[in-house]
Image: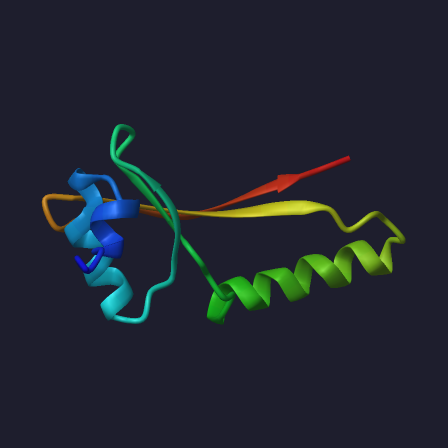
Length: 93
C-alpha cells in the first residue's frame, strides 16, 4: 500500500514547501491558495494587539456601544526589509 503524502494531496505546489516549513516551526496554517499566493495562519493575540483589544473593549463598554470591530495586521516586507508595519481598525455598526 502506497503511503499518501498529506502535503502533496492537500497543498498546492507553489506553497507546499513554505507551508510545511511554517507548520514544522509551530505556525498553524488554516488555508492557502497557490494561484493567489497567500497563506492564512492562526494568530493568538498577544502584546500590542491584546493591549489594543483591551483599550477598544473598555471604550465601547464604557460608552455602552456594540463591541464590533476587526483588527487587521499589515506588515509589508520588501527585499528583506519591513517597509510598513500597521494595524487597521475597522469599526462595524
